[in-house]
Image (cartoon, rainbow, N blue to C red):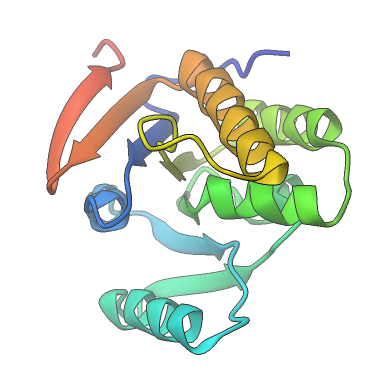
Amino acid sequence: MPIKSDRSGHITLVLGGTRSGKSSFAQHLAEESNRQLIYIATAEAFDDEMTDRISRHQQDRGAEWQTVEETLDLAAAITAHSSPKTTILVDCLTIWLSNVMLANQDIATALDALAQALANAPGLVILVSNEVGSGIVPESALGRQFRDEAGWMNQRVAAAADNVALITAGLPLWLKQASA
C-alpha cells in the first residue's frame, strides 16, 4: 500500500550515502519547522564505533529535542508521538530495516505498518535513509538481500513522500518537492 498524504510537505525523505551529510540536513529541516522536535533513534550501540556515532548525533541535537529509542516498532513510535504540533525525525530507516531483518520479522508487514503510521501522522515526519544501491555488490547473500530490501523500501517511501532530497557531499539535490 502506498503512503498517501493530503498535506503539502507532510512527509520528507532524506537519502544519502555514508557521511554524506544527510542526518545534519534532516536535523536542520526539522529545526526550521518551529514545532516540538522528536527524534526517533533506530540504532543500538553494540560496539565502540556505534557508541561514538550515537554520542555525536546526540551532541549535535540541542536540549529542545526529545529522543525516543525504537529499534523495531517504528510505526508504533510514530503513531504515539506525532501530533499537529510535532516534527518527527526518524534516523534511520536502513538501520531499522536491518533490525527488522535480523529479528526475523516480516519485512512487508513492517513496511505496511510504517506506511499506515506515516499516512495517519498528524504532524510532520522526516525520514533519513541510506542510498545503498550505488556501491559494490555485497559478497554475502544477507548483504545482497539487505541492499535489495533497502532499495525497495526507499522507492516505496519516496513514491509516497511529499519531498525527497538526495544529499551528496553535504549538498541537497531535491528529487521531489511538494507544490506550494
